[in-house]
Length: 142
Image 1 (cartoon, rainbow, N blue to C red):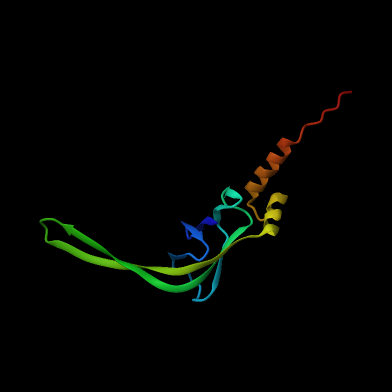
Image 2 (image 1 turned 45 degrees about the vertical axis):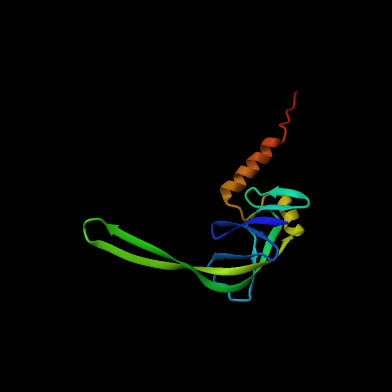
């Protein structure tokens, strides 16, 4: 079983016991992190694609270390001008180990119940308009 998750605007393919480097987080070493932005889940049941996320699924990960990536050298030069500048940096990363992929059926059932109240007002309005458009209009003839 594997999943595609979104962390800090980047997508990662994760499976149980996989180690990966994500952009630096503020979590302490040893903490357990829950990732709710699951975009796709593939397993024995088939593939479930979210719109935009798969409701009721989450990925748990343990923070192993805060590390720096390889040095990236930035070299600037203007030919025939005697201008050369060499700079570089090391990108900060957090190393995490995926401890499990789980489904939360309670939140899944809540998602299937209907529109949530914490949605923005124009989204609620569009959902209400869509719901009223689906109901047939009854007319009375006298």
